[in-house]
Image (cartoon, rainbow, N blue to C red):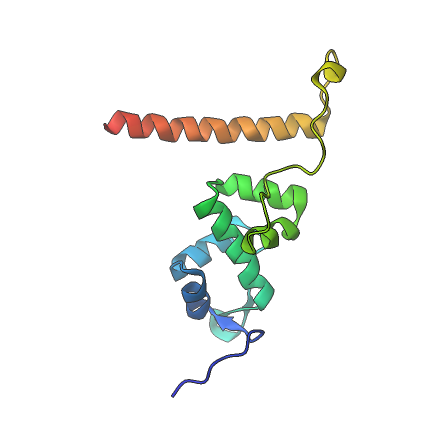
Length: 143
């Protein structure tokens, strides 16, 4: 007979994997790619996930599997917007890709230099586009 855990109880990696619908090795891999995923570790290296850990992982899974983000894209999103965007993705809280600031008027930007932050964002977008193009090229080459 198994006893059901409360909603705020810690989850083992196997329980987390079942709840999130991903294999355990994927959770371990995500730990290596996302520094913000830090389950508690007990003796012997056993991982225990808190409720918020599960929700952040759910957001990562949603962004990667459902929204088509790359790992770099999720890393950048977390860096720019913090954990709240991952929690929003986990709860289906709208399009997290949208920047809440209004788009600038192109006429007002004519002749202005880009800020370092804007240049970095554009560079990140270019990397993502090049990655997508490379994947498309690989698929087309196979056909």
